[in-house]
Image 1 (cartoon, rainbow, N blue to C red):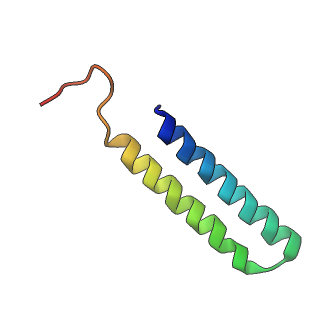
Image 2 (spheres, rainbow, N blue to C red; image 1 turned 90 degrees about the vertical axis):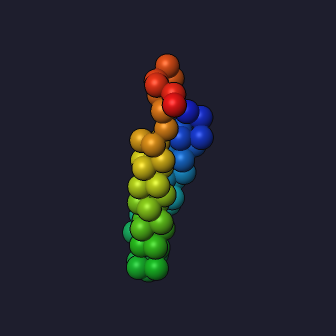
Image 3 (cartoon, rainbow, N blue to C red; image 1 turned 180 degrees about the vertical axis):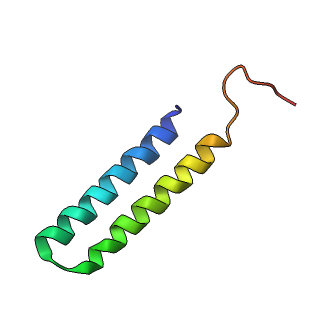
Length: 60
């Protein structure tokens, strides 16, 4: 796993956790947007992480 991919997963965890905590503490559903954005960020990290060639893999 590369450094940028680790950073993306860290961002996902932070945004989802912040959204969940703020939603529970304030009771305002607007913080559900944080959870959605975190999931979308995680999906993007997963897709781009899968598209990279592993070290020592075939090169064209």
